Image (tube, protein in one colour):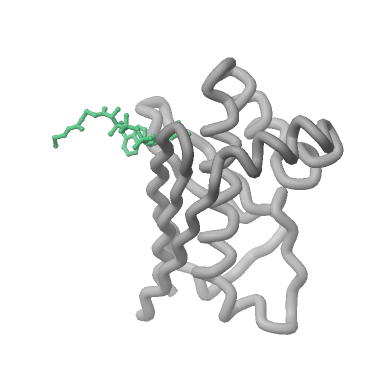
Length: 123
Ligand SMILES: CC(C)(COP(=O)(O)OP(=O)(O)OC[C@H]1O[C@@H](n2cnc3c(N)ncnc32)[C@H](O)[C@@H]1OP(=O)(O)O)[C@@H](O)C(=O)NCCC(=O)NCCS
């Protein structure tokens, strides 16, 4: 068994700017419908949640990059962040079946300026 980790930090203002300038096109390229609904439900805080999910996708990509090398082209909206009924986040990778992946765990945090994600993968 191997442990792989990925981490990412992002300025929330960068995501806010992309959403405000590129609108639906940016949102649909990066996020799934459910992620957009989740973030929009957070009203004024929504950019923190969008940024956290962006960081989550990049961190996941880093953690699984060894499986992707020259073989697969995975897009942002194929890595999806859900929250369970207690708010705990978890990841699903859509459209791909990586038999090597036994388990993925994620932790998110965000404040006014930054969002961060840590992902650990067991393979
Ligand atoms: C859940 C909690 C830990 C979130 O921490 P926070 O500082 O308010 O907010 P952060 O920005 O760091 O983290 C927010 C993210 O935490 C994650 N989260 C929420 N509930 C969670 C839970 N039960 N377990 C793990 N992660 C959780 C979510 O991913 C959330 O982001 P999202 O809504 O965009 O998905 C906090 O609100 C809480 O309930 N604290 C009380 C328990 C505690 O801290 N005890 C300390 C002594 S052990």
